[in-house]
Image (cartoon, rainbow, N blue to C red; front, side, top):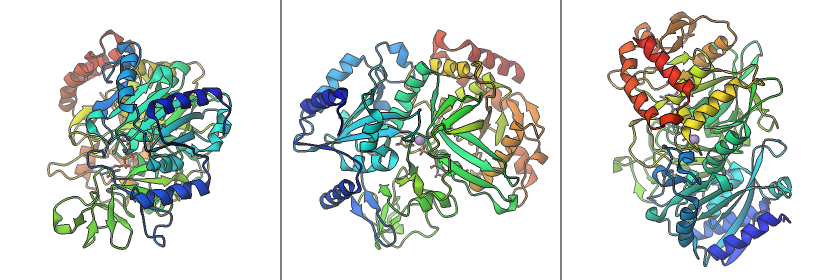
Length: 583
Ligand code: GTP
Ligand code: SPV
Ligand code: MN
């Protein structure tokens, strides 16, 4: 399928290491995929769902210990420890390779190795990049088929070029020997002892964020944990925004939102729901492509009411992971319907009824759905150069402190706003849920180099002379809670009201109130027509409490202190300026 000598030599090395019984090249043909689906069903790796109600759909259950990304076992292996920085786990590359080789040694005996060539980005795009993943998991092959452009098409794109070398082995799914390792200087990713999502679909977080962020740093572009959406207003004007929220904080939902009818004739189109590769275009604006071809979305909470478009996207050719199986061969998860089914099989494969007192679907259960299934997919989804960004939005889950929306004063302040992002942790990563932690630009788990250098790269990008028309930078928080713990903002489709204010600000069409943390909407400028929200709540949502923000400062300082001298001057200046404004 290829005469690329670099591919063939590497493959021989990896075969010698893992010793598979067979090697199968994935060409991407339906015939081959069908045979793999049938094989996975025959071994129980996949469960075929109701063909009438969910055509082409399958269910997969992972091991109970293997249900989310494992950040404490994820490493960035650069020659120098400082290049990985204090927010990443690090080990010297030689040492890591030696340790992992023992784990991989003979791990594919009795198994088949699949050679999965894939493209991140549209096939025709000059910004796309090729990877090859070697894996012993059919589940991974079938997911990669949805999430990337996979098969011969990728080898054709590759030609004699370079590629990201990805090796995945399930081994025994032993959590004590689980490692997700990036070697940015070698364009290499090694993952073992997992069979879950972001740990094993190596084109996604490992390549398109960790390796790509390092590439972007070296080459002058950016790889970000961002959705990309297009918004057309009733006048027919179309604008694009990108938004970075931490895992399970609303990217897929915002990317596919349904405009509330009461606002008039708006249209939202999805370009991407998780990752954006961003470059400066010839016209002096930032342009973004989505390197992925599908959505690996959070299932719980997805319903006809909250995210109609995502739900529609899952109705055919979708793989579900760790959701519940209904008696009629369809799927269920918490929040899909108001009333739970009287009986189903839970994500562990056990009998479940509403009386069980447990969750039927794992909180981080997911769907892998082809982007083409999405009713609101953008006609620019395959655009080789992507779409131009008017605004960049940061956001997180903050029960208190952060107002519904605010705008940064300028680029450097916007970078500071991103760099000081904090959010409550979610089920997307193993570990405690609901703990507030710093998550700069929603990239804490995904930055493939020193986070301080990443801040500097952000600052530098904003000041490149080619970037004559940079996007404005905002921060949002859909997750403010009242004293009873209820969400104060309706969220979901109503977030369009906030997007409208943001785009009006970009156009200079609307005024704002200046506060120490940035520009906040004047109450009368946020359209709340048709919304059941009282004046007091709205006031509170937009309020900036100086005392609360002053109390944030020590945490920010402590977080920045770990970067020592490497913290950019531009960031320190912003911190000093904020402190002065809060006096
Ligand atoms: P990853 O795929 O992990 O990167 O997550 P994501 O950022 O795409 O998050 P997603 O859109 O899947 O949302 C995660 C959870 O947040 C779901 O349970 C949603 O129902 C909930 N959520 C999303 N948007 C809103 C909102 O505006 N308000 C509230 N209250 N919840 C929301
Ligand atoms: C996330 O955790 O941000 C995800 C899911 O998008 S995963 O692919 O597992 O990283
Ligand atoms: Mn994500």
